[in-house]
Image 1 (cartoon, rainbow, N blue to C red):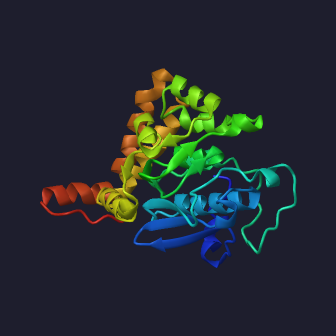
Image 2 (cartoon, rainbow, N blue to C red):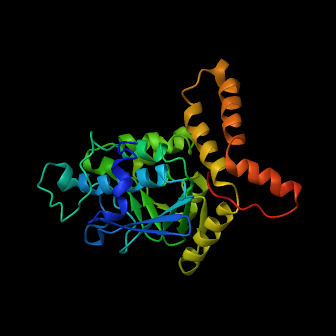
Length: 274
Protein backbone atom coordinates (compact mmCIF):
# COMPACT_ATOMS: atom_id res chain seq x y z
CA UNK A 1 0.00 0.00 0.00
CA UNK A 2 1.22 3.53 -0.75
CA UNK A 3 -0.03 4.83 2.61
CA UNK A 4 1.64 3.34 5.69
CA UNK A 5 0.14 2.01 8.89
CA UNK A 6 1.42 5.11 10.68
CA UNK A 7 -0.23 7.46 8.20
CA UNK A 8 -3.67 5.81 8.50
CA UNK A 9 -3.54 5.79 12.31
CA UNK A 10 -5.25 9.21 12.17
CA UNK A 11 -7.94 7.97 9.76
CA UNK A 12 -10.87 9.00 11.97
CA UNK A 13 -9.51 12.53 12.30
CA UNK A 14 -9.30 13.18 8.56
CA UNK A 15 -11.71 15.17 6.39
CA UNK A 16 -12.75 13.52 3.12
CA UNK A 17 -13.93 15.81 0.34
CA UNK A 18 -14.69 13.28 -2.41
CA UNK A 19 -15.77 10.12 -0.62
CA UNK A 20 -17.83 9.29 2.45
CA UNK A 21 -16.61 6.60 4.85
CA UNK A 22 -18.48 4.65 7.50
CA UNK A 23 -17.12 1.91 9.73
CA UNK A 24 -19.82 -0.33 11.18
CA UNK A 25 -19.95 -3.96 12.34
CA UNK A 26 -16.53 -4.89 10.88
CA UNK A 27 -17.38 -3.33 7.50
CA UNK A 28 -15.89 -0.19 5.98
CA UNK A 29 -18.26 1.47 3.51
CA UNK A 30 -16.68 3.81 0.97
CA UNK A 31 -19.19 5.95 -0.91
CA UNK A 32 -18.03 7.83 -4.01
CA UNK A 33 -19.28 11.37 -3.48
CA UNK A 34 -18.69 13.53 -6.52
CA UNK A 35 -22.14 13.17 -8.08
CA UNK A 36 -22.01 16.49 -9.95
CA UNK A 37 -19.04 15.08 -11.92
CA UNK A 38 -20.63 11.62 -12.28
CA UNK A 39 -18.15 10.42 -9.66
CA UNK A 40 -15.27 10.85 -12.12
CA UNK A 41 -11.97 10.75 -10.29
CA UNK A 42 -8.93 12.99 -10.19
CA UNK A 43 -5.76 12.64 -8.14
CA UNK A 44 -7.01 14.03 -4.78
CA UNK A 45 -10.07 11.78 -5.13
CA UNK A 46 -7.86 8.72 -5.79
CA UNK A 47 -5.71 9.67 -2.81
CA UNK A 48 -8.78 9.47 -0.58
CA UNK A 49 -9.79 6.07 -1.96
CA UNK A 50 -6.25 4.72 -1.54
CA UNK A 51 -6.08 6.10 2.01
CA UNK A 52 -9.36 4.36 2.92
CA UNK A 53 -8.18 1.08 1.39
CA UNK A 54 -4.93 1.29 3.33
CA UNK A 55 -6.88 1.84 6.55
CA UNK A 56 -8.94 -1.29 5.81
CA UNK A 57 -5.79 -3.26 4.98
CA UNK A 58 -3.97 -2.42 8.20
CA UNK A 59 -7.02 -2.72 10.48
CA UNK A 60 -7.83 -6.34 11.34
CA UNK A 61 -11.19 -5.27 12.75
CA UNK A 62 -12.26 -4.44 9.17
CA UNK A 63 -13.43 -7.71 7.64
CA UNK A 64 -15.17 -6.45 4.49
CA UNK A 65 -15.16 -3.31 2.33
CA UNK A 66 -18.20 -2.09 0.39
CA UNK A 67 -18.04 0.49 -2.41
CA UNK A 68 -21.16 2.56 -3.08
CA UNK A 69 -21.81 5.82 -4.92
CA UNK A 70 -24.01 8.88 -4.63
CA UNK A 71 -25.79 10.23 -7.70
CA UNK A 72 -27.18 8.59 -10.82
CA UNK A 73 -23.84 7.25 -12.13
CA UNK A 74 -21.68 4.84 -10.14
CA UNK A 75 -18.44 6.04 -11.76
CA UNK A 76 -17.64 7.64 -15.12
CA UNK A 77 -13.90 6.95 -14.85
CA UNK A 78 -11.27 9.67 -14.96
CA UNK A 79 -12.04 13.37 -14.91
CA UNK A 80 -10.47 14.15 -18.30
CA UNK A 81 -10.22 17.87 -17.61
CA UNK A 82 -8.27 17.22 -14.43
CA UNK A 83 -5.98 14.68 -16.11
CA UNK A 84 -5.42 17.10 -19.00
CA UNK A 85 -3.75 19.42 -16.51
CA UNK A 86 -6.55 21.79 -15.57
CA UNK A 87 -6.42 23.06 -12.00
CA UNK A 88 -8.12 20.87 -9.39
CA UNK A 89 -9.61 22.27 -6.21
CA UNK A 90 -8.75 20.04 -3.26
CA UNK A 91 -11.95 21.26 -1.54
CA UNK A 92 -10.75 20.80 2.03
CA UNK A 93 -9.49 17.23 1.92
CA UNK A 94 -6.97 16.64 4.71
CA UNK A 95 -5.64 13.34 3.38
CA UNK A 96 -1.81 13.45 3.40
CA UNK A 97 -0.07 13.59 0.05
CA UNK A 98 1.13 10.12 -1.04
CA UNK A 99 4.83 9.36 -1.43
CA UNK A 100 4.21 8.65 -5.13
CA UNK A 101 1.37 8.82 -7.62
CA UNK A 102 -1.54 6.52 -6.79
CA UNK A 103 -2.03 3.55 -9.14
CA UNK A 104 -5.42 2.50 -7.85
CA UNK A 105 -5.33 -1.04 -9.28
CA UNK A 106 -2.27 -1.78 -7.14
CA UNK A 107 -3.99 -0.50 -4.01
CA UNK A 108 -6.81 -3.00 -4.49
CA UNK A 109 -4.26 -5.80 -4.90
CA UNK A 110 -2.76 -4.92 -1.55
CA UNK A 111 -6.09 -4.80 0.29
CA UNK A 112 -6.38 -8.55 1.08
CA UNK A 113 -9.99 -8.13 2.25
CA UNK A 114 -13.29 -9.08 0.58
CA UNK A 115 -14.40 -6.00 -1.36
CA UNK A 116 -17.90 -5.61 -2.77
CA UNK A 117 -19.04 -3.05 -5.34
CA UNK A 118 -22.70 -2.10 -4.90
CA UNK A 119 -23.37 -0.85 -8.43
CA UNK A 120 -26.66 1.01 -8.69
CA UNK A 121 -25.86 2.95 -11.87
CA UNK A 122 -23.66 3.09 -14.95
CA UNK A 123 -19.92 2.43 -14.95
CA UNK A 124 -17.63 3.72 -17.67
CA UNK A 125 -13.93 3.83 -18.53
CA UNK A 126 -11.64 3.94 -15.48
CA UNK A 127 -14.58 3.05 -13.26
CA UNK A 128 -13.79 -0.51 -14.32
CA UNK A 129 -10.65 -0.27 -12.14
CA UNK A 130 -12.94 -0.28 -9.12
CA UNK A 131 -14.93 -3.25 -10.43
CA UNK A 132 -11.81 -5.22 -11.33
CA UNK A 133 -10.31 -4.53 -7.92
CA UNK A 134 -13.32 -5.88 -6.03
CA UNK A 135 -13.84 -9.55 -5.20
CA UNK A 136 -17.59 -9.20 -5.81
CA UNK A 137 -19.68 -6.88 -8.00
CA UNK A 138 -23.40 -6.81 -7.25
CA UNK A 139 -25.12 -4.79 -9.98
CA UNK A 140 -28.62 -3.46 -10.41
CA UNK A 141 -30.25 -4.82 -13.55
CA UNK A 142 -30.58 -1.29 -14.96
CA UNK A 143 -26.83 -0.55 -14.80
CA UNK A 144 -24.80 -0.16 -17.99
CA UNK A 145 -21.08 -0.80 -18.48
CA UNK A 146 -18.78 0.54 -21.19
CA UNK A 147 -15.24 1.46 -22.21
CA UNK A 148 -15.64 4.48 -24.53
CA UNK A 149 -11.97 5.52 -24.51
CA UNK A 150 -11.29 4.68 -28.18
CA UNK A 151 -13.99 7.16 -29.21
CA UNK A 152 -11.76 9.86 -27.69
CA UNK A 153 -8.49 8.56 -29.16
CA UNK A 154 -7.51 6.89 -25.89
CA UNK A 155 -7.03 3.23 -24.88
CA UNK A 156 -8.07 1.81 -21.46
CA UNK A 157 -4.53 0.76 -20.57
CA UNK A 158 -4.79 0.11 -16.82
CA UNK A 159 -8.28 -1.32 -17.17
CA UNK A 160 -6.78 -4.17 -19.23
CA UNK A 161 -4.76 -5.31 -16.21
CA UNK A 162 -7.88 -5.30 -14.05
CA UNK A 163 -10.01 -7.20 -16.58
CA UNK A 164 -7.52 -9.81 -17.83
CA UNK A 165 -7.83 -12.07 -14.72
CA UNK A 166 -11.64 -12.14 -14.96
CA UNK A 167 -12.38 -12.15 -18.71
CA UNK A 168 -11.51 -14.06 -21.82
CA UNK A 169 -8.71 -12.12 -23.58
CA UNK A 170 -10.56 -11.79 -26.89
CA UNK A 171 -13.72 -10.61 -25.17
CA UNK A 172 -11.72 -8.05 -23.22
CA UNK A 173 -9.94 -6.73 -26.33
CA UNK A 174 -13.23 -6.58 -28.23
CA UNK A 175 -14.78 -4.55 -25.41
CA UNK A 176 -11.83 -2.13 -25.56
CA UNK A 177 -11.85 -1.88 -29.36
CA UNK A 178 -15.54 -1.49 -30.12
CA UNK A 179 -16.64 0.55 -27.09
CA UNK A 180 -19.80 -1.52 -26.88
CA UNK A 181 -22.14 -0.69 -23.99
CA UNK A 182 -22.98 -3.77 -21.92
CA UNK A 183 -26.13 -4.48 -19.98
CA UNK A 184 -25.87 -5.81 -16.44
CA UNK A 185 -26.75 -9.25 -17.83
CA UNK A 186 -23.90 -8.96 -20.36
CA UNK A 187 -21.51 -7.93 -17.57
CA UNK A 188 -22.57 -10.97 -15.54
CA UNK A 189 -21.97 -13.35 -18.46
CA UNK A 190 -18.49 -11.88 -19.02
CA UNK A 191 -17.53 -12.10 -15.34
CA UNK A 192 -17.43 -8.34 -14.76
CA UNK A 193 -20.41 -8.61 -12.41
CA UNK A 194 -20.86 -11.50 -9.99
CA UNK A 195 -24.57 -10.95 -9.28
CA UNK A 196 -27.41 -8.98 -10.87
CA UNK A 197 -30.54 -8.01 -8.93
CA UNK A 198 -33.38 -5.51 -9.17
CA UNK A 199 -32.53 -2.00 -8.05
CA UNK A 200 -34.85 -2.21 -5.04
CA UNK A 201 -33.12 -5.44 -3.98
CA UNK A 202 -29.56 -4.14 -4.38
CA UNK A 203 -28.85 -2.98 -0.85
CA UNK A 204 -30.33 -6.08 0.79
CA UNK A 205 -28.43 -8.37 -1.62
CA UNK A 206 -25.14 -6.71 -0.69
CA UNK A 207 -26.00 -6.88 3.00
CA UNK A 208 -26.74 -10.60 2.68
CA UNK A 209 -23.44 -11.17 0.87
CA UNK A 210 -21.49 -9.25 3.50
CA UNK A 211 -23.14 -11.21 6.30
CA UNK A 212 -22.37 -14.50 4.56
CA UNK A 213 -18.70 -13.53 4.28
CA UNK A 214 -18.52 -12.39 7.90
CA UNK A 215 -19.76 -15.81 9.04
CA UNK A 216 -16.36 -17.18 7.99
CA UNK A 217 -12.90 -16.62 9.48
CA UNK A 218 -11.69 -13.13 8.54
CA UNK A 219 -8.09 -14.16 9.21
CA UNK A 220 -8.30 -17.16 6.88
CA UNK A 221 -9.88 -14.98 4.16
CA UNK A 222 -7.30 -12.22 4.61
CA UNK A 223 -4.33 -14.56 4.37
CA UNK A 224 -5.97 -16.54 1.56
CA UNK A 225 -6.40 -13.38 -0.51
CA UNK A 226 -2.82 -12.41 0.25
CA UNK A 227 -1.63 -15.81 -0.97
CA UNK A 228 -3.76 -15.50 -4.12
CA UNK A 229 -2.19 -12.12 -5.00
CA UNK A 230 1.38 -13.14 -4.16
CA UNK A 231 1.22 -16.51 -5.93
CA UNK A 232 1.51 -14.79 -9.31
CA UNK A 233 5.09 -13.75 -8.47
CA UNK A 234 6.18 -17.12 -7.04
CA UNK A 235 8.22 -19.43 -9.26
CA UNK A 236 6.27 -22.50 -10.40
CA UNK A 237 8.54 -24.91 -8.58
CA UNK A 238 8.16 -22.89 -5.36
CA UNK A 239 4.35 -22.63 -5.34
CA UNK A 240 3.60 -25.50 -2.96
CA UNK A 241 6.41 -24.49 -0.62
CA UNK A 242 5.04 -20.95 -0.49
CA UNK A 243 1.44 -22.11 0.04
CA UNK A 244 2.54 -24.47 2.82
CA UNK A 245 4.20 -21.51 4.54
CA UNK A 246 0.99 -19.51 4.22
CA UNK A 247 -1.05 -22.43 5.59
CA UNK A 248 1.19 -22.53 8.65
CA UNK A 249 0.62 -18.81 9.04
CA UNK A 250 -3.16 -19.32 8.91
CA UNK A 251 -2.97 -22.13 11.47
CA UNK A 252 -1.08 -19.86 13.87
CA UNK A 253 -3.89 -17.28 14.00
CA UNK A 254 -6.27 -16.97 16.93
CA UNK A 255 -9.16 -17.45 14.50
CA UNK A 256 -7.83 -20.87 13.42
CA UNK A 257 -7.45 -21.93 17.04
CA UNK A 258 -10.98 -20.73 17.78
CA UNK A 259 -12.38 -22.42 14.67
CA UNK A 260 -10.87 -25.81 15.55
CA UNK A 261 -12.00 -25.50 19.18
CA UNK A 262 -15.54 -24.57 18.10
CA UNK A 263 -15.60 -27.58 15.78
CA UNK A 264 -14.65 -29.90 18.64
CA UNK A 265 -17.18 -28.28 20.97
CA UNK A 266 -19.91 -28.33 18.29
CA UNK A 267 -20.64 -24.62 18.55
CA UNK A 268 -20.43 -21.53 16.34
CA UNK A 269 -17.00 -19.93 16.21
CA UNK A 270 -16.53 -16.41 17.54
CA UNK A 271 -14.07 -14.63 15.24
CA UNK A 272 -11.77 -11.77 16.23
CA UNK A 273 -9.87 -11.26 12.97
CA UNK A 274 -6.58 -11.98 14.73
